[in-house]
Image (cartoon, rainbow, N blue to C red; front, top):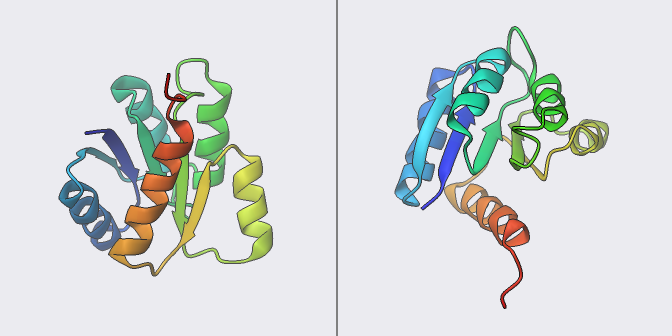
Amino acid sequence: MARILIVDDSPSQLMGILRIVEKLGHETFTATDGASGVEAAKSVLPDLILMDVVMPNLNGFQATRTLKREATTQHIPVILVTTKDQDTDRLWGMRQGAKAYITKPFTEDDLSEVIAQVFSAEAPPAA
């Protein structure tokens, strides 16, 4: 399956997301803040990044913008996974380059569906 980087500063959130993603059969990598998430993305080059927004050092909006400006990481889709549920937050996140936005709390099915939607949108057209 896919290689997915999970970036979240909350250990409980990180473990919950990790459990869901691994249950889907994906290989996982983790980072606990935006800055280490950017560095992990550069070294791992995952197929997808699940990015929290409210984090120390570099927030998820800043980290997403940084990744989208880097030639080596700009192709990696980012799903923002956050408690920030205002329309302006969602709009700002998408303007930073996120492919999708899901708010906490979410169900396992919600997250699985958003991951599947992003992967199907990223897939090349069938020949």
